[in-house]
Image (tube, rainbow, N blue to C red; front, side, top):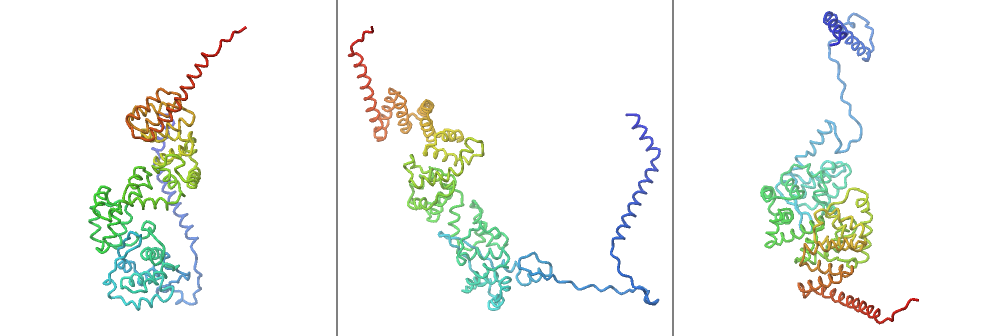
Length: 493
């Protein structure tokens, strides 16, 4: 230990009482200063000079407390109220009283809302008095939502007018206004889904919350539905089945689709949802070959080409093999939408690429629209799909048309090894061999393809074209050899 530190410690040890006394003195001095500062800052009351001894004696009576002042700001129902205004609001429109009249709801196949009706909930309510309370704007703000629900359960036709008043009222609490807009959306004229109204979760009514959980869940298990069915009205079960047909496990939906029209419709809508999300050509073919192919074609026609997903969905059509298979106006829209997303940024500049199933359709788009350099670069981002036969065929075509014929032939050779009896692979390989001048190999490939698929019209046609061109080539070569043999020798002088 350094000698200076040793001396310091010995000094502190010998005079420790002085240090303790100094610390206590400092604390007392600091306390006195704070007390003086607080005393001087307190407001002083004016002192009255006493006129007599009696007046100089301090009074023992309690000081009068001033009456509470009222904040005269204009209050709107739904603001954060003070305890006084909150008590008035709760006496007039308690949340529990309003929540007791909530009903379960369901949606039919056309998207219209269906509501459960229970007259016994309003058996003791004076509807006339309730409507008189809603005669003014402030009355609608306080009693409007409650009156609308009560009139509905009573079967009174005035509930429609009341719903319109409530939904357009400026000072109504937002959760009440959105609740009425949602439950009576057929009257308001604005279609709403449960996910579009987050404030619906504010209400704690069992039937209402159960219906809300059913329509906001991504998937519903059969065990969960058994619990939900205990809280939901039986008269709405047919409409709940339609929702379940889209949310139960896929294996259950497929099993019940053959025996139930509702589940068959749910399966169709589930297929549309999956196709729009993942752009799967196999799902496309399943819908195209189903008994709802006409509705599927109408759905495709009505679907606009505005977003990136819409444009790529048009590209995902398994019947599209060339650009000519797409209508000219639609092709322009597709190119405009996709080029607006600037795919070169994630292809060549290292930006974050889109999802894998989007990249898959981007690759097809590049091949169809003649953007072969982009297609070759995009193929490297396809991950597991680089082993897919269809994508490898598109890739070989992109290599060949981008000026890399030998790389294209190497890819076709690999494809023939992996798929030796595939008609599309053999047909494409024969064409590339012919264009690369590998005539003997092309003749062998076409002959092999014809032996495997004698009735394939495309292979037969391409073989005929190859034979004709190859025959002309052979004739030209023979004629050039004949000319060389018949030409007289030239003596060079």
